[in-house]
Image (cartoon, rainbow, N blue to C red; front, side):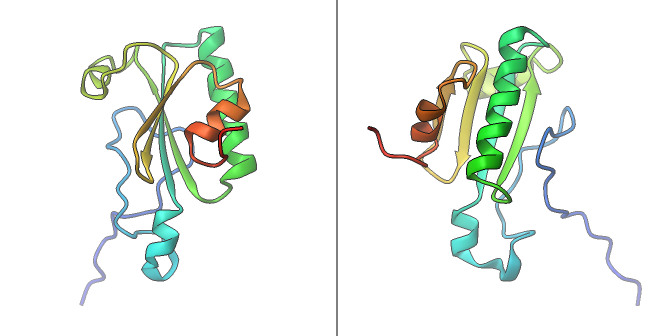
Amino acid sequence: MKPKPTSSKPAPRTPAPPGAPPPQSGGHGVAGGAREAESNRYVLRLYVAGQTPKSVHAIANIKKICEENLKGRYVLDVIDLYQQPQLAQGEQIIAVPTLIKKLPPPLRRIIGDMSNTERVLVGLDLQKRG
């Protein structure tokens, strides 16, 4: 019997290839498929417009915040709207950079270059409003 080809690898951390479908939270790549581990997994999408200074800062800032606060528990897709403008319509992107927290619920949107770490952490539900 031939082994089945596997198409469900753990999603890359950053950035996803252009045109990649959004990551699914079906338990793939989660040790033992534990629901608690799934609920602690963050699925984030950062929408940027090319390599503008704000976009570059947003990418660097969110990567740093994620590595410091979500190490090993997040997937970050960076989507350049100059390359994939159609993706802005489905997500109702009205300004860039915009970070969307898809998982865990509730869905959240954070607009800006992610330089205000406290605001980003509150938006990701990692810190209470102070």
